Image 1 (cartoon, one colour):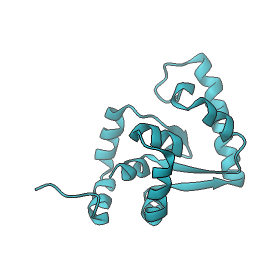
Image 2 (cartoon, rainbow, N blue to C red):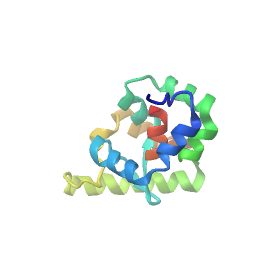
Image 3 (cartoon, rainbow, N blue to C red):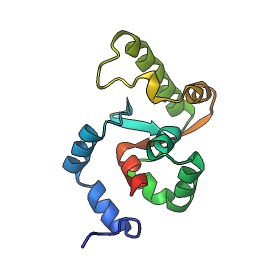
Length: 138
């Protein structure tokens, strides 16, 4: 009998606490984030595109499950933290020009072009860790 992860936050947490399984999923899914502060990070648009849903669906998930997603690693970047994240993206863009095949470098193609433009203009940005990304899928 399989567990219904949509109804059990305890079952979701048990899966998300298995770091070996998380690493294996990361290695096999091929959905790479931006490494920032020791963790891979993903924007709401990236998450929505991966799951082929509208960003409003992600907004609703956040509205109803914010505490759980924050425990999994969702953060709202503002101020200095957002500026540092933007600097990291700028550095990665510079690196990706010279080494586009590096697995730890996220290419521009993983971002929606208009997302990059709006990213550098925004004053706050919701960012998901890999565990929060998986939590959205559950």
